[in-house]
Amino acid sequence: MEDDQHFNAGTGSNLTIVGTVECDASIMNSAEDFGAVGAMRGVKNPIKAAYRMLVASNQTDPHGRIPPMLVSGDAPSDLAVDPSKMITEKAISEWKRWQTVIQTEQKPSEIGSDSIVQDTVGAVSCTIDGEVSAGVSSGGILLKPTGRIGEHASALVVGPAAPVVL
Image (cartoon, rainbow, N blue to C red; front, top):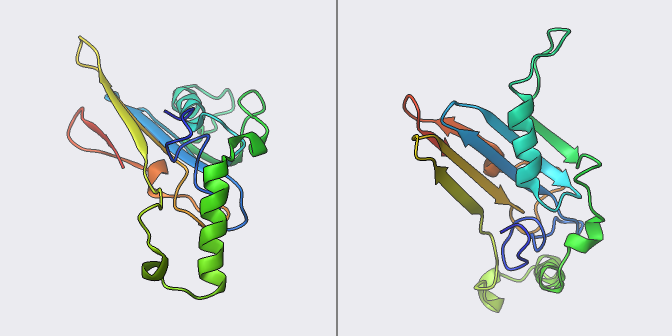
């Protein structure tokens, strides 16, 4: 879904106030393992980076350091892409449109707000053994401040083995 420019996740994400793409993603499983990325730049598939954090959170550090469950900022080099390749014509058009609204102090109701894309993609899987995983990915809200980490990079466990990703 992050590769489909029609979704607000990965390629096709909403642009920040300065016209860049920053994505949030999180993933969790029924073993209560969790990984997330926030305001990540230059990653085409932020859920892959979040999964990497999930796996790393189970690794033992030889020096006793606790591995992070959430990181933000630039994508790991092996997952990085040219950030400009993630920006679509539709995203640029919406960004320009709403920049004008802000600069001219128009009310959204004056120009119609039906085209604002603020969706999130997500998936849930369940194995035959009852293992559950859930993940979400989003480009966040249109014109968000640079570095804003949204709710997509957080999770909550409900019950003894029921992950819910917010």
